[in-house]
Length: 337
Image 1: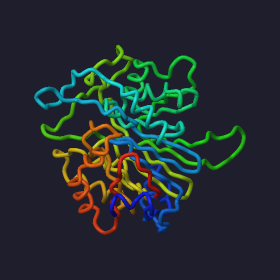
Image 2: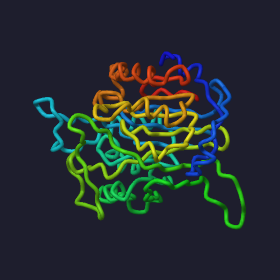
Image 3: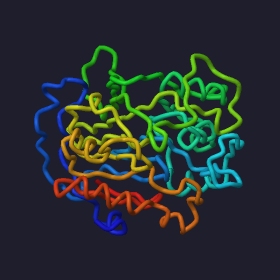
């Protein structure tokens, strides 16, 4: 589907597969998916890089909301992790005013690198979000980094919560003494960081206590990588393996999401990445690439739309075959599933 057509017509959606939640016997059964073009009420918005907004029924979840898009190379054009962290308050103000127009209930972190986590403290302190009660999910390392950067902030109601994979969390909380179905669930899965030339990535590391306040790109270490599946009642499930171009197949084996948001950045060292992801997850009806732009062009520069890696999208389409529809998103443009 042409990217420009997504926002106007929506894309074929499907009923949610059974809850993933680690019940491999149940989860492995083939999902029954029925087409409901563009009327699921569930919408996605690409925030650039690996950032996403998911909205439905008055609820909002955001994943890796990094909007600053600072430079990360030196004079030689190579990555320079000694560069000082920057915050583009102008673009944050604009995006929250024009696009992310409400505070989320959950903020989900896939890992700790700057292009995923660096803006989070400033978003949580922004006037549009600071009075909300936002639950921030991440690993122990991710939350230690946020603590070092001043999260949750004095007098704030934000709730950092450590997760490691396997958790199935409901919203809202179960009322005392009363059985009720949640509006949606967030399931956490252990995942892996991309591996490119040399089989590694940088900066790596984990933390067991808050460090000194991060000042450089190198201070924001990976700290473990996570994925998330958000399931909206019996309507739709969306799996976000969106923060990297790698995944732990045995952690998600048996999951049958209706929609897969899949990292499409460099993965030269990862064998058959696209093919294995699509096959392991049962060939989801809709697949959306993520983390496949240039990381630096400002979000309000019209040229940003041309920085998406079209070749990566084409390779993903080839791997997906005729069973899945690959939707190429446009920066900040919302589309309905």
